[in-house]
Image 1: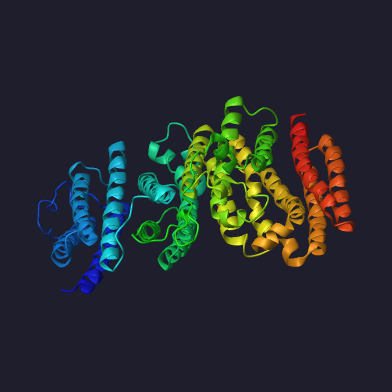
Image 2: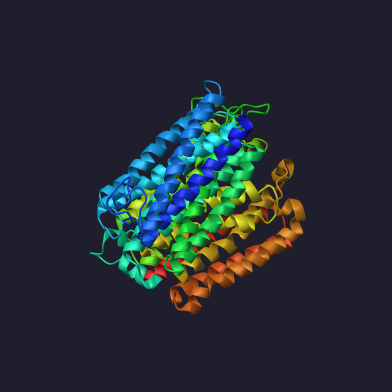
Length: 605
């Protein structure tokens, strides 16, 4: 037998085990786990059951196919040790796969022998279901890696991966956690069915309900936050470890997770029918395996490490001697200050008063950390153009007082701590929205739009509109129409503010080839666009008055602030020079801050 044949066999074994795992989910979803009674490995005391019931036939079929899967993995391991030389990773992968196949069989047997089947509602069953899911994930992962290495994939290089290794490990753990929460949710759907989504939500929030019911509401939010992270990590890793494989896996991951979230919504809407649960689980396996293969390609021996400057003339390993001031500079505190101000004022607006000191401090710290993480990643990605711009030439990633590897580690630590802090101190929705802001800034603006189109700041600027949503949900736990108004206000204000800055430093942008609006279409078009967005911002700022959310105090403040904003925009239109651009740029920051203050004062009064 050749190694080429072995690789095809290995992929076939992986597919077969996925199908067996899906059939196991069908056994659980149909309540057929007790189809063979409490007997194992026999079925109702017989090797082959005679005159079986439907449940018995379903369970026996699962056992038979599982037995074939066990033999296929055993044969895979024996072949790997026969065909590949000592030290080849396919040997390790197949051996680990066989160990997980053994534990898979033992966990399956425990479900039957201890009666954790059918309508058992014990906490022990939920724990074993999570362990079973985790073991299946590990089994499929080891089989996928065996097939990957047998097909020519390079061995892993784990040392020196820094933040890339940490980001991938976090993604794998997050997907594992998501899968385990999904297993518990699916068990709750089986044991505690509901008539509609509203009933499911009401029961989830009712004190005294069974823990399987109360945990159900968390799974969708966990799915969104984990999905956002793994897609973000996929594209960032594809940028830092560029290859045809990482790019393809990153794209596949994004598409798969989009379909997975859609399937999850349909699953909830249809009240979790069996066929939909199976499809949902199949997509979960696919996401897990694609992220795993992305990790294998990114960590492969010989993969170029962009953050270390490999493949370029200049290395980015850091000169050392960084102080706390350098790490503070990584977070861009001056940029964050206004974003954080809108976050905290949104809390006052939502609460119509003081939201509580503890919550206020948690959101302040968590919001700063998440925004700081986004800025630190931005500095790593943009260090090549930052080095050629006067405004950014002293950034610590350019001077290399902090290495790119160190900056990324710092950023991921900040982001993780921020997410956990906001989840603990506020709620999961708040943490997810903060993460969405980071992802939008890094993925959509920095990695995709900034160097491609002059619309970069229009679309990418939405990242700066997430902070008010974070502050609002921290207080209320939900997103109302008023919260989305705050989002829209900052979204339309951003081009006015940033294009004024772009006019001031357009020579720098032109020198490094960043297609900001003044560089691409010229000053006249830029000032016309600024004037247009200033008028749109003014009109949007009046919407809460029409909705009855704000009163006279805000009305008079907003009229004055908007009049000045439009006048300064018109002044720039008449005289598009540095002096008027600086004036509008500085006033735009004051405008937004005072407008939020006016809203907070009006709501309190």
